[in-house]
Image 1 (spheres, rainbow, N blue to C red):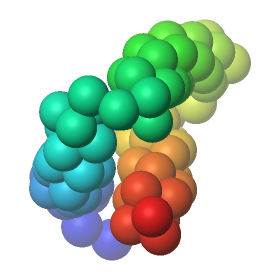
Image 2 (cartoon, helix red, strand yellow):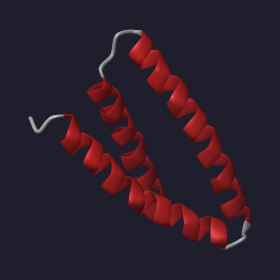
Image 3 (cartoon, rainbow, N blue to C red):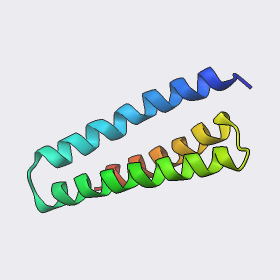
Image 4 (cartoon, rainbow, N blue to C red):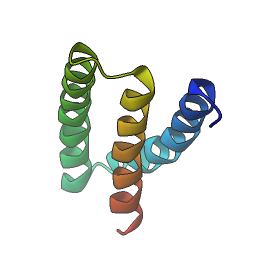
Length: 82
């Protein structure tokens, strides 16, 4: 409806919440923080591979952004439940 710019902007805004929650957890220095750092790195690699696969299969950039937003939403829900 609003085009790719809206989705990309929303991804950037929504990601800031997750980044803040992750940084707070990592900064605690706890075992949970270390696990979150490892999870974050592996999720980034997995998401990049998934995005490349989607694009190579003919997916649109909008579809890639929508999928990233799903990942961000899931992380926000998981991190805020703690």
